[in-house]
Length: 126
Image (cartoon, rainbow, N blue to C red; front, side, top):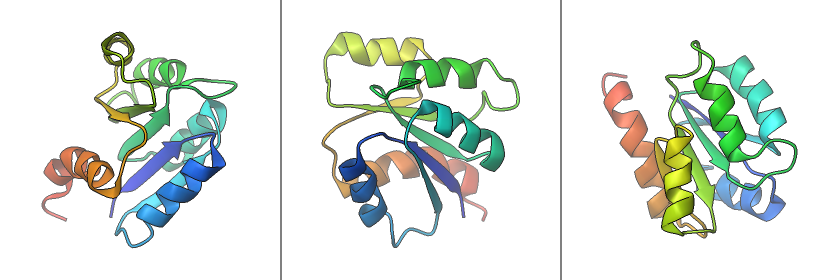
């Protein structure tokens, strides 16, 4: 079982993620912004992080920068989420250290594909 943290400020998307992943074998944690997300990341040491690009207090780009600057957390893949699908914003996400980018709105198949992409190789023996 892996630990996955979602940093998402929109309540309806938090609820959607919870519904989509309620039958998941993974432990799912949801933070309402990047500050709360960083505290949760430090405490739980997740295997995978999803972060909304646009959040109050600490956006997804800043969260990715913080994560990549901490040697004990820098190895954790971060997937940025946004409704903005412009090539320039996606490239900006990669410049901040994102491992991938998930465009909103997304469906269960897209979400599961991202999770499997980053968790299956490291959890194949568990």
